[in-house]
Image (tube, rainbow, N blue to C red; front, side):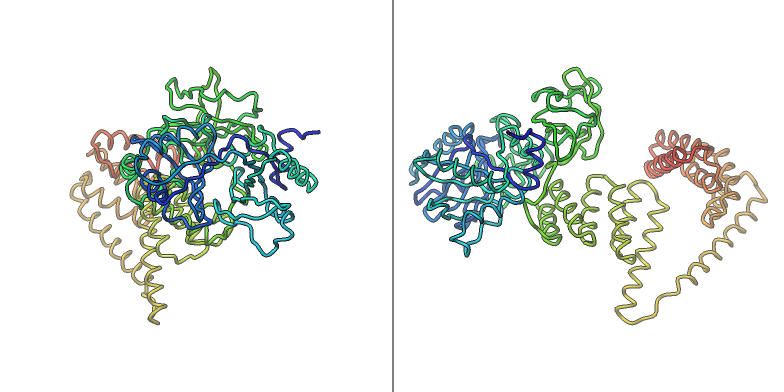
Length: 581
């Protein structure tokens, strides 16, 4: 009895699964000019590959549109290409179109059976078939390969994950492909593996965030729209067909639409998902197109790919999309949805991968690697710090602040964390917290320097008392001046500011109210009065003052107080919602 899709997927995730892949084709490219020719035509760095290595690669047209996405493998006498049969002919035509005098040939390998093993136990099962070759290791890096013998049959073994977990492909050139497949199938089922139906493979593929030709992209799709350029493009190799478009997109901005994940909030089964190709509408406006969708047993919810515009494809953003005439609450997610043991990497390795992706301009992939680094090694300070910086670049300042606070939980006197927090709070318009973090950064830097040099720490308490005394003297000065003109806006603003500086909130309210009575368009006075009211616990009045200040600052174009007014109002509103009354 064949297990249902959900059970089979879970079994693959626990153990391993086996499937015969008849939708893939193998091409062999040999000849003295093969490597150099492909280096000038394909998107990745062909010449950098060593024998036994492989890579994801793509053939493009001049506009950067996909003509074929495939994996390429370096052999002693040339290269092998693994590509979907749906893309094979177009890709060959694209290569041969520019093949004039170069010495190489492209040959289809027809007598080959391709078997996929996916899941955390796939390597153990494979080793059990290689008892006579225990000294030979299986390929460890994605796209690497070796040739070994299974039951006397030479088999080309590739490290390739189609599931998000560890995975291998077995390619055997044989006159009896069906017999080889049945022998492997019997051995796998005897070892508690499960046969992966087409439906099971589809769920695993979507969970792993792998786009498929015909379903998620076609020959009119720009490579960067799919996200595949992160693995399939070298930005340092030089010219190739379509390179100008790819480089321009990287240099000058994002594509208009890009493939992201959607997590459906309602409990939907596979048959309840809208069909692929459906338009996604937001407030009556088309914002994207739905692609592959499945019910994910791993996440226990429906998920799908979709091409969305810049404003909509923000990770974590919640949208209510109209698809096929029905409303679907969804959350936007980075791909993949699932990433298990496909790469057994340490936190440090993932950190290095994330930093390299960041340096190469792949921010979303970098964030994903850094999040995984934190999962593997929660005490990795550099990962939190780097993730915070990248988040801030995308104006996700609240989460960026959270990352820096985690750094400080691990290392309270981390200078850069305080410095970054100062910058992030300033971006949110919270000048008070920004100044506070700036001061903490200075103190942490002094402390570090003092410890390194053996010097005594500066007496910050004495400095604080000195500053407080100076502020008290300013208060008395303003009060003396106001005796001659109690309604003077300049004197009242100065007095209120000095009282606010000492956190004497209740006393500061009246001077700021007098300032605004005389100068009703004084944007900063609204901000200061709001802070004073808030500090004195008069939250509703503070709300009204902030709102009035926003209207004044917006009309005048006073951007700095406007940002801080908006931030204070938002923060206070959230506080009141959480503590009504």
